Length: 117
Image (tube, rainbow, N blue to C red; front, side, top):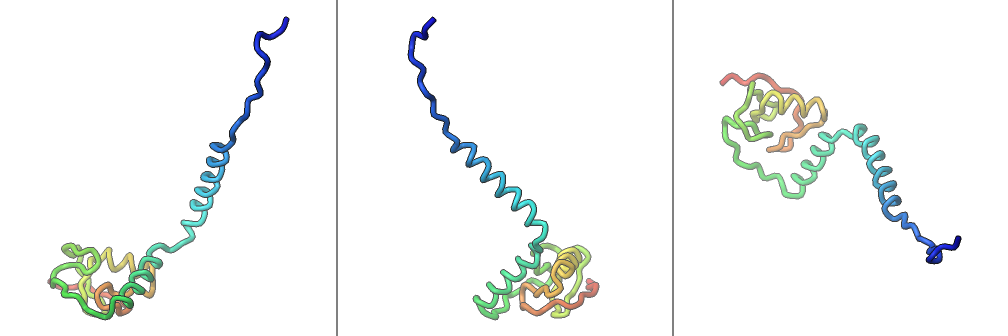
């Protein structure tokens, strides 16, 4: 018995598999490194650099607005620089970054107290 056509050699392309292996390795690397980074601290550092490049212009702030989220403050707190924050906004940022700067005046927020409306 003889084949009707001669056998043709097929070439396999491994481009797709190579691409999948590279992306899998890259995603595994990111998933192992990202939990080690303090993203809030990186964001605050970026904002500090941006604030220093723009200048020390203090923007006008509404009196009853959180300077971090620009919303109505929930459990209003006042910082050492006398700016108003939501409790969650200031507490989360101070816990994440001990050198948290105020978004308005760039002064380091050391402490905060309850604001009586």
